[in-house]
Picture 1: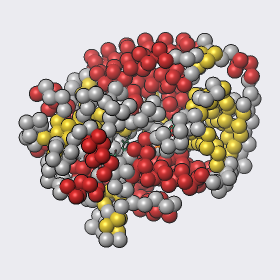
Picture 2: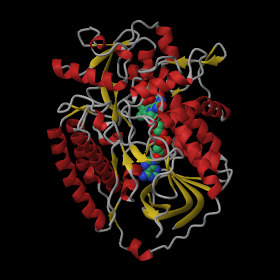
Picture 3: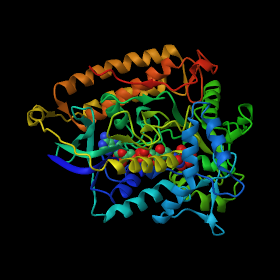
Picture 4: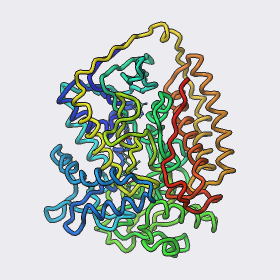
Length: 523
Ligand code: FAD
Ligand code: SIN
C-alpha cells in the first residue's frame, strides 16, 4: 500500500511529537511508530530538562558547563543556539499543558552532574512520562495528524535524484509492507543503547534510524561516544526488560556514592565527587568494582529526610520498594548501564541531514551539541530545539512535489519469516558490545568485537538479500550496523576523550580534536 502525506515522521517520542504538532498547521502529517505510541525513551526520562530560569544562573554558565562536559568537541555555535532557546521551548511545553514541579509559585530547579547551578526543570521524577502523555493528548484529536502504531520503518526511499521521499515499512500486525511517501521525512527514531546487554533504554532503542540513514548514504558522526549512566539499579535477576534508572537528580539532592564497605570514593576521582560529569563517575564505579571485585556500589540517601524522598522521587522509591529496598533506610545498589548515544545521523543547525528531504532530530541525530560527553538533561532540550528548527526549514519548500514509482514485483519476492530463534544472535551482539566495547576499551578487544559483529552482519545481510523480512531481522540488521559504527569509530579515535576511554591511549590528543564522521560508499 502507498500512503501519501506532506510530512512523514518516524517515531513518536518528544522529537517526533513536537515536530508533528507544528507541522500539522501546514499540512498532513503521518507519524509511524514501531510499537505503541508511548513506547519511547522519552516516556522514561526522569531528571528533566536543563535550562536557565534561575536569576543567579545565566546562558553563559550553562554554555560553559556544556562545553566543559563535551571535552572540546561540542560545536560552540550549536551550543549557543540550543541553550539560548531553552527557556522559550520549555515555556512552550507549559503552554501545551505539561505540568512541571513548582515551589513557591516558581519552577523547582533540580541539580545534576556537571552543572554549576540548579537548572533542571522536572515533573518529580517522571518528567518524560508527563511530557509524552501531554504531547500525545495534544495530537489526539488533530485532524491533520495520523498516528500509525506497530509500523516499523525498514528502509528509506530515495528518488532518482537522491532525495528522500519516504520509507518502506512493515505493518507488524498484518505482516504487510507499506510505502509512506511525503515531501519531508523526519527521522525521530531515538537512540541505540539496546545494542548493550545492560541498558536503561526500553526495547525500541535499537538504532533503526541511524542504520537506515547510514545505508541510504547519510553521514553519521561521533558514534564512539556512548554514554553509560553511572547509576542504574543493580539486580541479581532483572525483573524488567531494562535496567531501572536511579536519576542523577538523586545525587543532586544529596545522595552519595559509597563502596559496599560504606566508604565514599568519588573524592579520589573528581572535585565534584558524586556529582562529577557522567563519564568520570561511570569510569570511577567501573574501576572500583573491577579493582575490588564488587558486583556494584551503593547510593546512600540517608542525608535526605524520608519526606523529601517521597515528595521528590516517588517513582524511584516505588521501584526500590518493589525490589525490597527502602531507600530512606537501605542504601541502593547501583551499577553503570548504557544510556545515551551522543553520536548519530549528522545534521546541520536546521536538522537537515546530508540527504535532501531527510531531517533528523532527537537522540538519533548528531548535531554537535554534546561533543565527547553529554551534559545531563541536555537531550530533551536538544530534541525540542532541533525538531522546531527542522519544521521551520520546511516552510519555504512546501510547494515541492514528490513522485513515487511503486515496484509491485519487488514486493512479491519478499518472504516473511518468524525468527524468534534469532534471539541468540541479538544477545550475542549485546553481550559482545558490553564485554568488549564498554566503558573502558582497548584496541585488542575492539578488534575481537569487530570480527564477531562482522560475522553476524554477513549472516543477516544474506537473509535480507534473499528477500526475508521480519521486524526482528531488521532490528538485528540495524543493531549490527550500529555496533559496527561504534567499533569502527572507537578504533579510529586513538586517544581518550570524554566517553571514549581507550587504555592503549589514555591521553587526550590535539590531533583528534575533531568529530569522527563515517559515510557509506554507495556504488
Ligand atoms: P524516543 O523518545 O526514544 O522516541 C523514538 C521513537 O521512535 C519511539 O516512538 C520508537 O518506537 C520509534 N522508532 C524507533 N525505531 C523505529 C522504526 N524503525 N520505525 C518506527 N518507529 C521507530 N534526557 C534528558 O534530557 N533528561 C532526562 O532526565 C533524561 N532521562 C532519561 C532517563 C531514561 C531512563 C532514559 C532511557 C533516557 C533519558 N534521557 C533523558 C534521554 C532522553 O529521554 C532521550 O534522549 C529522548 O527522550 C529521546 O527522544 P526522541 O524523541 O529522540 O526518541
Ligand atoms: C537522569 O535523570 O539521571 C537522567 C538524565 C539524563 O539522562 O539526562
